[in-house]
Structures are given as C-alpha cells and as structure tokens.
Amino acid sequence: MTAINKPRIESIDLLKGLAMVIMALDHVRDYFHYSAFLFGPSDPTHTTLPIFFTRWITHFCAPTFSFLAGTSAYMVGKRKSKNELAGFLLKRGLWLVFIELTIVAFGWFFDIHFGMLGLLTIWSLGISMIFLAGLIYLPINYILIFSVVLIFGHNLLDTIHFPGNMYWAVLHEQSFFKLKNSFLLLVGYPIIPWIAVMALGYYFGRFYEKSYDGNQRKKLFNLIGSFALVVFLVLRVTNFYGDSKLFTHYGSLSKDLVSFLDPQKYPPSLLYLLMTLGVAFLILANTEKLKGKAVDFFCTFGRVPFFYYILHIYLIHLLAMLFAQLTGFGWINMILTSWITYMPGLKGYGVSLWAVYAIWMGIIFFLYPICKKYNTYKQNHKDKWWLSYL
Image 1: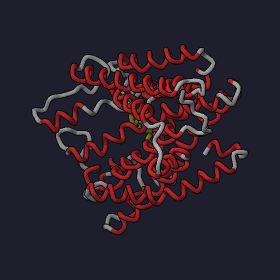
Image 2 (image 1 turned 90 degrees about the vertical axis):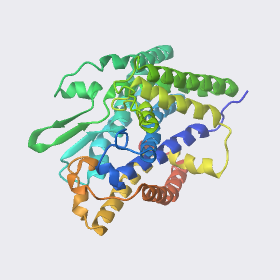
Image 3 (image 1 turned 120 degrees about the vertical axis):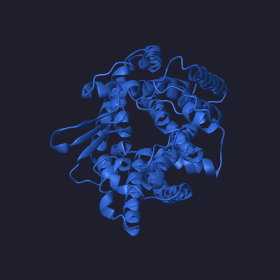
C-alpha cells in the first residue's frame, strides 16, 4: 500500500506549480507579444501554430488550479470541524473577491481611478469557496452528483441569453458592462460551472486519505483522465454536445487543428473541462513518485500560489511599462482603461514570440528565490494564522 504521510502532497504541489508557471506565459504574451494587439491567438484564420499552442497550453491552468483548490480544502478539513472549515472557506472566499477587485485589479490596469474591473480568476476561486462552504455539509456523494450534473449539464444553458443582464452574465455568460461614469465591468469568469469544478476537486480529496491505496489511486485517476479525453474527442469530432464553439473544418490541417483544440473557455464548456481536467488527472496519477530538482522547483511555486500570482502580475506590468517607454510608445499607454489587448494605442507595440518566451523565463527565474524564501518563512511560522490567506 502506498499511503501519503507527508504534511504536503508533492504531486499536488507539483501540478499547482506547473499551472502557475505556465499561466504566466499567457500573461507575458498579453503584455508583450505584438500579435496580441492584432488578432486573437485562437483565431484559426489569423494565428499560427506556435502562437496558438502558446495560448493553448495555458488553458489548463484555471481548471487545474480550481480543482486542486477543492482538493486542498478537503485536506484542510481533515484538521478542522465542518463549521471551522466552512468558516475558513467563507472568509477566504470573501477575501479573494476583495483582492480581485482591489490589489489584482490595480495590478492589471495601473489605473488609480479603477475605471475597469474584471471578475476574473481570483474572483472565480473566491466565489467557488463561498459556495463550497455550504456544499461541504452535504454527504460526499451528493457533492459528486452536484458537480457532475453541473459540469455535464450547464451547456444546456448556452442558448439562453439575457442581453445586458448582469446577473445572468455572472451566472453563465461572459460580458462587458458599461456602468455609471464610463466605468467598465468585465464578467470574465461566470460562476457556472466553476463552482462545480472546485466541488469536484473537494470530492476527489478523499482519495488522498492515508488509508487509500496509492496504486488504486493511480489506476483510478488514469482511468478517469483517459475516459475524459476519449469523451472529449468523440464529442468534439461529432459536435454533438458540450460546446457552443463548434469544431469547424477550414480545409487546412493547421486551421482545423486550432479549431479542434479550442473549445469555449468563457464560461468553460464541458469539452474544455474534459480536455483540461482529463490531462490533470493523468498528471496526478503519474507524478507521485517523481523526485529531483525540477520537481522541487515547480513545487516551490505550488506551495505559495497566491503570493506568486500577485507578484507576477505587478512584475509583468512594470516591465511592460518600462518596455513601452523605451520603445517610444510611452509608459502612459500602460495605464489601461480596458483589457490590454483592446487598447488601440498599443498596435505596433511588442516583441516576437521567442522574445516573449525569454521574458517569461526571466520572470520565473527572478521570482523563484523570492517564492522559495517566502515558502520557508511560511513553513517556519505555521502558528501565524494570517499566512493561510497569502
């Protein structure tokens, strides 16, 4: 029997770290790649395969991290009563929503007037934790049923539209809203089905109980991951169900490939979640025994994800501001009133794709020792309750 006796589960930290590091690539691309201001990286009629796969690999980050946040919540709950866990999830969820609308929002835009706010990744994690605070009182199998029904069934809502209705957008339809005094709100991450992804992760936390056989866990996760990918392939080829962005044949292998591998993310379709979480299950199944410096490197980011997330946003934006100034666009153009790729004054700005990768790697290696030092501090000061919120 292979039981996990360590205070932290390295395969989970490893996958979290991989997600966080890869996520930064997409943000660097947004702020530095010249094509980001000309066309969408997933547009089959304009993109190239290198640009598309630079974007595609980052699709795995948000679902993976949301799922693992649920798994971590289950493991935290083994040391707390239900009421204590619910209180923790509720407070942490509210904290994350607040941070999204303040510190994270300022990091994205550098606009002291907060002319635009986005309900984005951190918001979705916070809202999902708030819902999970209530869901944990259900029998564990009911949580599984809730998650599966919502993930598999939410695409039935794709044909329902209420234009201009913010409440519906928050639930299931990405939208921009222009509010008073030209204030913009981007509902980027509608809560359905994100709340189900975290709840599903909570359910699968039970398979990391010390009493559960590690070999059985590996077989189960490999089976689930493989099954998810097979279902994705079948549904994507047939366009039968599960995605509002249909697979389209363009008469070109590269364009067809882009269309095939680009299911709907906002909100995440069933096919998007099958594709991304299927891979996540396979990685979890086959990395428990991995060791070495590379594993330690990625685990470092996985142990301090929120701290790293805040730092990487500010660092990327500051570097972009400096680069804009040095290349004649002026730093003022990096004070954003909309999402950066929609800023008309930045057309012509940016670098080639290889330079994007170089900047990304530089940022990761710069942040690594900072994150490592902070992780050491956290491990040595577990008595400080506030560290659990960072």
